[in-house]
Length: 79
Image (cartoon, rainbow, N blue to C red):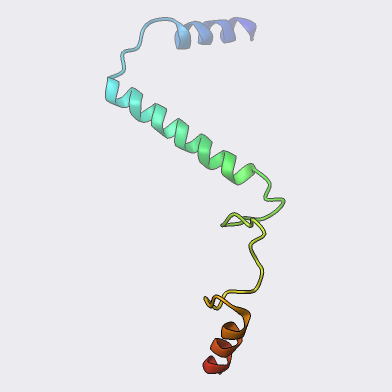
């Protein structure tokens, strides 16, 4: 059995193989993209995905008015 494996190894790994550059680049690009996909699928999503900076600028004054009185007027006009 060991002799057969040694013979098979010699047949598979001895000699030269020429590959066109285009094929070599395609194999490399495929391996790179497959690695990226595998990494994204196997990485745990522990905290979910957040888009934005969440820098604490959530003061609730989003009406676009400069003062609190005019902000309340804008809210009343919308209703």
